[in-house]
Length: 169
Ligand SMILES: [Zn+2]
Image (cartoon, rainbow, N blue to C red; front, side):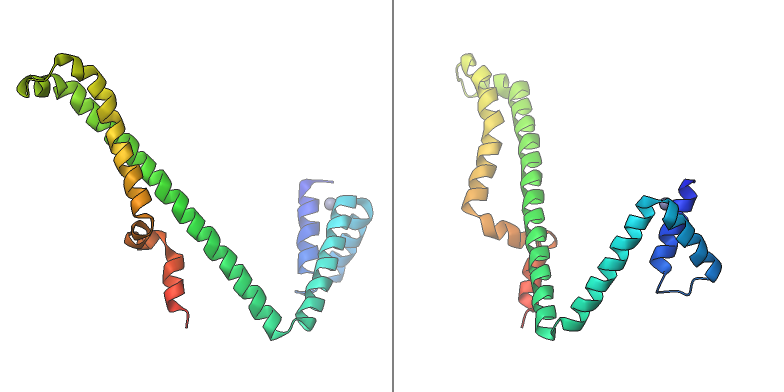
């Protein structure tokens, strides 16, 4: 028995009841299912799922269908909003790391010169690197805490849920 046999069996099980399968195909499938417990189990599960779907389709009222659809949509919206938040936090983190690195590097390169110009003590230069490394991250954190919602409004492409809320009548 080859992998192709199993694929052919699965294909016939799925097509069974949708397309007309030839008598030869049906006979081949029966003999395969008799030998192959995996495909036989698949055929049984497929058949039971089909029955379940048909019985649900008959008994589901329009109200149940629309409630279910609304729930699925709400869950999808929730997931998208969560995803947008995660993306925004990741972007902020990257910006924070980059700007911290840049400002620390600038201070490392030019801190001595600035200290000399402002007649500050040269002993400030070394701790200054840490200070300039932390400042952008602290500023971004404060901005995110102070303006959590305007940030989401400013990024409409990351917030499809907001557009949908606007469309609801
Ligand atoms: Zn098989």
